Amino acid sequence: MYSFLKNRHLLINILIGLALLSIPVLTSPDFGRDVSLFSISGFQQSLVSYILLIFFYYLNYYYFIPTFYFKRKWWWYALLMIVCYLMVSRVPEVLFFNQPEPNVPFEVPPPNPYPFNDLQPRPFDIFRFRDSFIFQYLMVLVLSLLLKMDNQLKTVKSEKLKSEVSYLKAQINPHFLFNTLNSIYALALTKSDKAPKAILKLSDMMRYVVTESDSDNVPLEKELAYISDYVALQQLRIGGSLDLTFEIKGSAQGKVIAPIILINYIENAFKYGVNPNETSKIDIYISVDEQGVLLDLTNIISVHKQTLSESTKEGHLNTKKRLDYRYPNKYNLDILQKENTYQVKLYIQLL
Image 1 (tube, one colour):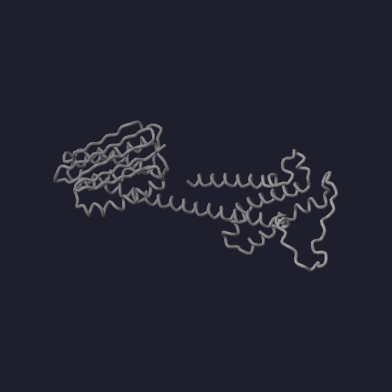
Image 2: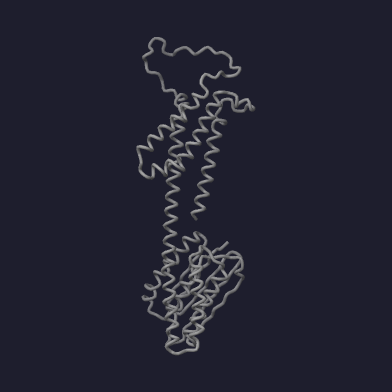
């Protein structure tokens, strides 16, 4: 996301530079001439002024604002803005001072509109104000400030979301480890022959969590293998008291997904949908299509309804935050809780 923001602002800055460069050409009274336009000293002066204005924009955006404005060095920043304005407005005048216009016929100057009173105030000359470049300069100054502050706010927001996601991952990993160790502990208490196989499954899962969970994306095949190992481990722990349906359809080849983003709802199904004193039922269907992946999960509620709502609230919010960050406007999440069933349908658009 940060890279996207950076490229977006770079494109905007390039377009602003091109727009400023086109202004002296499009606003010139001699617009429409051939290349002889570039031999007119008035146009040359205007063109150099706008080139200096573009240089000031980039210098202000990339250096002055981060170095002085954001660090609250107000006096230095104000002094630099004054110096830059003097350069933008005065350097072209010095470069093109008293250059004669080619083939310009002599014209009699207009009469003085106030011949009898030179002290009478004269009307505001908008063209003189325009030629002073104060308006153009202030416009570029304000524009560079606004865009830089917008970029800074979005960067800070992106970094904050990234930190939150890292924190959420840190919460998920211990939660997963504790649940799995409890499952293996239950097998060890009964001296089950399934314990070694469960430990092997746990080893594969922990290797995935340690090596892949910090990545932004992982191959979908690895994520589905991780889920399959988790479900197999739970089957080993629960045994015959669980009526489980687990199916994966479609090809995951070539697709990537944010790691450990589907497992929360599957963990909750085993945590709150299994009762050792009665037959429990969990249905897990994962379908991969051309655009994304669908998780369709249903389990019978085996705990008190209020306890389920309180316990799953935090995990649901954590998963939703990660979905909002990684897949904004690219996922659909429906949760339906009935009297004795809990159903989750989550579709993530991956392409």
